[in-house]
Length: 253
Ligand code: ADP
Ligand code: MG
Image (cartoon, rainbow, N blue to C red):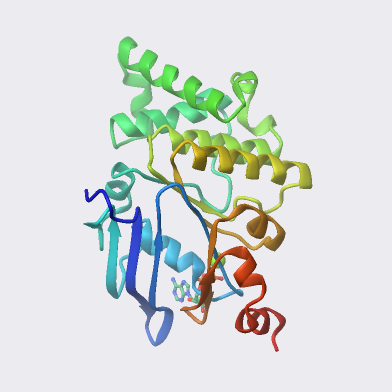
């Protein structure tokens, strides 16, 4: 790792599905302790970009680096172990499990990259370590009181935060969040934004795809705007708000 390298640097990233260019020679970077939003109209290539940088899909060409180290074409699990954790657009909590058990799945995956069913075969010391870590992360996100509740009994906003606690068990340097505010109530969005700022201030870098403009404008340090697979603009929320090309793309001008 190079001390001065960005946490994530993407250069000339390209993904083609047959004749369709979903991501078109895209370049951007995410620095330390920075919250960056990836926005753009439907079909702009945001989700594909997310899948490329998390190793879900290999790029057609281009370059992905974490901390200056090559990660192009690495598998999702390998990228996770390099300190990059993600949540998914749709909540993925195990229905029959409590909140703390769901968080513990994250701590377990850190120890052994493998089957969740192996949780049942852990020795006592390992199990204690995993649950201690899960409780620590649940406390960090402010949901310690809910540890023993069934995960599915929580409000959607709380479930999203449980997923973040689970991701934090990987001890990541970077969090990637896919539409974390989707479907949340106003108050839940404010809580989520406060948590993400707290995590940034604790040293994490965050990249999020988000449709909710008020949420993204109020939260991020910087925005990358995509259109037709390319980078249309990049800048602070203030700069983006006043960018004529962005206004045109969004208002269909
Ligand atoms: P966004 O998330 O910005 O709405 P996507 O990254 O989902 O955009 O999609 C970008 C373009 O790539 C769209 O035209 C979409 O239809 C296409 N696309 C995405 N995934 C696939 C796939 N697996 N196969 C074919 N086309 C795809
Ligand atoms: Mg999408």
